[in-house]
Amino acid sequence: MNEPVASRLLPQKARILIVDDDVTTIRLIGQLLVDFPDQRFATTGEGALALARECKPDVILLDANLPSMTGFDVCELLKNDPELEDVPVIFVTSHDAPALELDALRMGAADYLTKPLVASQLQARVHAQLRKRQRAQGAKATDAALPANVLALVAGDAAERELLQALTDLGELQFAREGEAALTLAASHRFDLILFDVGTHGTDVLKALSRAQRDVPVIVLGQAFDAEIERRAFDLGASDVIFRPFDTVVFRERVKNALAIQGKTEEEAATLFVSAAQSDRS
Image 1 (cartoon, one colour):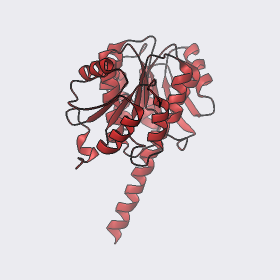
Image 2 (spheres, rainbow, N blue to C red):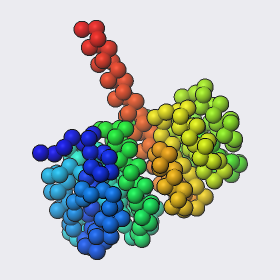
Image 3 (cartoon, rainbow, N blue to C red):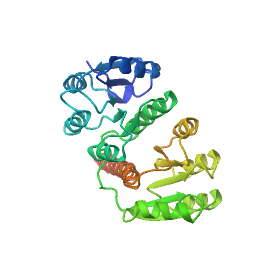
């Protein structure tokens, strides 16, 4: 009998399904995720689907290149299965191609990592997906939450233009260049998403913003890949971490996914509130 998902989302209980046609890679990923003892393995797409339906994993790590059935085929079938559509899928592939990453995200993938894997990055990304799932059970990425109100804490005209170009038509962006200004806005407005440039602002500001806008997703932006910055950002509750240079279309899709999950979560919370109120009156 499967244990309820909500009780399994701590690392020592979370169930991880690793899918790769290379047994050596499976062994490596398993070692990198040693803090997650409940690991299941599959070397084919067909095997992955059968195992996912049987064990209901909490996170799936999926190689894009599989024999007979590609990882994209597997992801599409998972996202069309009512029992599995909410399981986060992290693509793990040797293809560092924005077009493939975009396809994966639009198909419903939660994340996209390229080999060779960095232990701290992989661990942080898996932990982040578990936190998201705990916070938004049943959420599926759509455009339902748009348009949105986004707070962007960045430094300089170039950074503002970069975000305006990438996020045009997604909603209203309010910019702040100093932490104090961002906190003032956060105290007087309700935002759907926060974009935080870690290169120019410290983690103390990130903590304060997260407290001021509790349960609002935060996407941390960095100048260049740094595994330690990524780990710290996720530890502080970041929803996603994106390093420059980034592909504009892929960045936009990641923002849309974060907004959609937030919108679905608020919708479910409102439904629960109404149900509770009706119950109190009966």
